[in-house]
Amino acid sequence: MKLWVCCVLFVFACQSSFADWVRQPFWYDDARRDKVAKGTVWPQPKNIQTTTQSLSLDPEGFSVVTSDSAANSADCKDVLDPAIERYRGLLFWIPADARVSVSGDSVLGRLRVTTSGTCTKYPNLDSDESYTLTVPASGDATLSAQTAWGALRGLETFSQLVYEVDGKHKLNVTTIDDEPRFPHRGVMLDTARHFIAVPYIIQNLDAMAYNKINVFHWHMVDDQSFPFQSATYPDLSGKGAYTQDNVYSPEDVRSVVEYARMRGIRVIPEFDSPGHMQSWGQGHPDLLTSCSPTSIQQDIYHLGPANVARNSTYDFMQRLFQEIREVFADEYLHLGGDEVHFQCWMSNDEIQQFMQQQGFPNTTEGFAKLEGYYIHRLINILKEFPKRTRGIVWQEIFDNNIISGDFTIDLDTIIHVWQWNNSNFQGIQYWDELPQVTAAGYRAILSSCWYLNFIDYGRDWPKYYECDPHNFTGNAQQKELVIGGEAPLWAEWVDATNVVARLWPRASAVAERLWSPRDVADSDAASPRMEEHRCRMVRRGIPAQPQGPSYCEYEWNILSQLPNYRPVITSSGPRVAEGLFNNVFLNVLVLAVAKFFV
Image 1: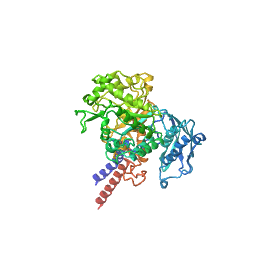
Image 2: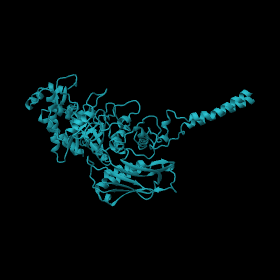
Image 3: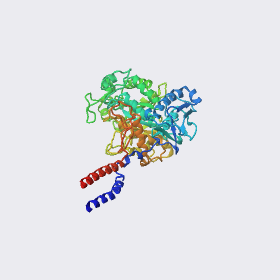
Image 4: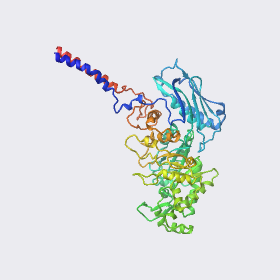
């Protein structure tokens, strides 16, 4: 009897210690929702001052209004009115039956939006995206911008300030003065290796807007397929697409361009040549060079890069570019120029004769001159269009200039730096390439360190976050010539089943690097904001993949039968283990005592 009593007392003495042990942080403790930020902004604004003083928003009474100056501009109104309506839906996500009255709270009643400059129909490289946002302790909140594009960025920021507390939409008293660090902030999507249907492109554009990314680089065609439906050359997609269901009609393209425009996003198409053109040759074999099969060029038609010796090639490209220019609104066209294997040109008598006529030697230097000749003629074609059109090219075009010593490519051509040197690819490190490109006077955009198609086990967004476009040796003028960058997603292993999740929130790391000041570079400090932002995207219908163990209140609704907002009733975390232990312990104790007395 005494032994039993001693055991009971000992267990009672240990109970408190065991409960404390249960509360100790485990590996999953970082996943608790109290570790996630609330009402923070991604990307981090240039200057932000926020307080702990909170205001409530009443979904029934809150309004967003534009000033007279904004309302008087048709181009501003064209963009702002739909944006205001769109963001109203993003501001208030708590279902009506789950909302709690804000009666008696300090309430923000209105956001006043003002644009003081002129508004262009389409965003461009020089668009002003700056804005100031003030959420005062009393009175109206104000959003001021020079352009509609800046107002869009400010509306996104305002929407991210709002968070949920006990069934109420809240935000804190805050002042923000913001502008992007780089004007070109892009995502590149490959729709040739796998066809990506328009709804998934639209979904990605929404995610881009939520991250203040302003360029959609559409790598539409490649060796594998030609899904662009050309009215001028219908056989390009008629014979070059996977199927006639896997094509983008002119109406599809215009719908994407318009959807992007309304979110301040430029759409830059890429029609890569003279390499990566096997799909072109399905319908137009005379466009390509006939070559002897080699270990590098093995295909059933034995066709290689574009036949750059024929004037008919340039006539073809001129008519195709004219059509592309009419469908796409941006002043830039990505001409490609990467990964051209010279062996095919070397094996073709027509090419060899043309090179002799041009005085190009039958060497690497000569073939570099040959590709430079081709690209130079394409750029001259673009310059002839009534609407000013300029080119973007992959870095090989610049590297060929170094090899050949022939810098004939116009300085208003942008060099797209993409190579790196590691186990995946042996190329030129970007910190060695950018000094040469900018020293020659060219503007550059960077992609080398942001290839999202390469995946690692674990959380990989910090490595993208830590790459900086100015991480190279050069003077201030050279740094200014780096106008931004893009996160590419090549689609060998990507289709509609995983494209959006593969992009986000990993591309969010690139978005912050290209928008926020350079000293915003601590991925550990950014992690709580990243967790909130990823969850916010999920709530908004973007299936952004998790970045480790985490808790998101708005779990992704995989059945897509209900609104994505779906309150999740869960336990309150590790403390439940304590309660569970107590209940089990007490039940066992009661049974033991009962058995003893029986």
